[in-house]
Length: 146
Image 1 (tube, helix red, strand yellow):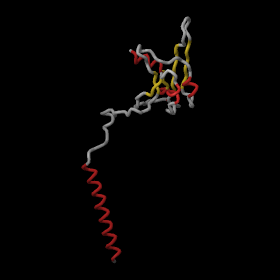
Image 2 (cartoon, one colour; image 1 turned 60 degrees about the horizontal axis):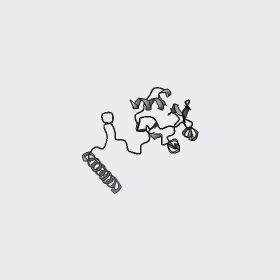
Image 3 (cartoon, one colour; image 1 turned 90 degrees about the vertical axis):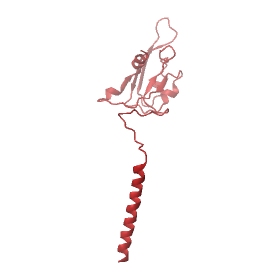
Image 4 (cartoon, helix red, strand yellow; image 1 turned 180 degrees about the vertical axis):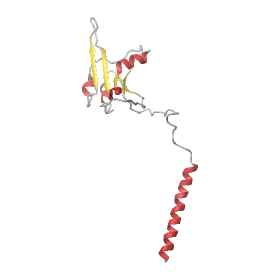
């Protein structure tokens, strides 16, 4: 019979301890963000997809050397460049990123000799098909220029 009362006492004690924890959490301030109503502040080291960096004149810094394309372990980058007649350097004509296969490793950003790539701060990517995540970064860079 003494085991019976001991179990009732232990159960009551654990109930009070649990209610105490619940009460403490109830009076603490809320830490949840109200996500679609307020945009979260992204940390400085957040890695979204890659983007082309513009120089002071508003043009992209890419020299179409292909280092990012060669060093990408997943092969998600496709670059095309051409050398205009009479020009000294190649000009970037096409830069495609297939974000469905990108592993966000950052090797492309590190291997770029002109620092023409950076991670974007886009976090809310949503789409209905895989084609929505294939980005033409040159076109995006030109649209941001305007």
